[in-house]
Picture (spheres, rainbow, N blue to C red):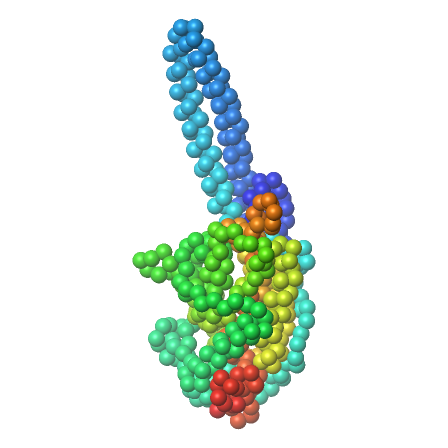
Length: 426
């Protein structure tokens, strides 16, 4: 959520930000509606001030008449009418303010100046690491890992149990998932200084609104019938909301948290996109990083957190590239995002396995997360950052393809061998 003064005082700046994202045409009427509500609010305030001044003058005249023993019945009746009119104006103003605030939840974050304008084609590769393996002779992961191959990925039975977009890992496949979780969390806690947390896998409506899943992405969520609770779409939601409606000590900033969670997403409107194997699922596992920062430190914190996510890929020996997303490809709550993409030679694609974003104070305003800079300073909003470090399915797909051997076996990266107990799958 933006500082509402931006909507009230600088709507043209908001229009420019929406233009950079490529959504001004679809949201222009929403900006117009916000401006109309603000005009209504100001008109109510002016009318209230006039009515209140008239009521005060009337009260003084009634007092004077009573002191002089002059009948003031007509003035008292006028006062009742003014009071009713004032109450109506106050109600109209409150309704305009409420609608204005609700409308503010519909606008995406404003991207930072160094984010390119435009859509996906304007994304910029800022650096690469490792050498991508040539595509020739590499089988896609669903073939090498399926029942006719290693037998560690059971797509058919996952779909039978829950439906399309759900998978079952078996044997060493299940152990691979567990070993990735342990490897990542140990890396981020022991070497990168994150505090590990274990969070609820369901969240309430206030939490979903605080991190901007609601109202924009309500159709993408899995709700729990009979309760106003939702399966987590990402651990960013519960971890960021740990400090909702709290004031943090500036001395404790910056600070970082790491957690594991399954993630659940209906992904309405994504049907037919990358549906083979592990490329697009309704349930997947992820290790998530969340950082809280003061505003002046948040740019450096984004670079730091992105480096932590890159370390996962480097330890696994997977070639990747870091992509700065253009404004039109940047997530709703983000002001700047780096995607980490790994090369999957079996499908011949760069696959996103991590998004590292700074949300500036956008989420903190919605969730009311503040810090006190020090001394007698008033509390101000923190900056929140989040990053996948990393998501498992496409990472596993890439491991199965990048480390694939001619006979169908898959070599295990050195960092995972102790947990898996083998140096090869198959």
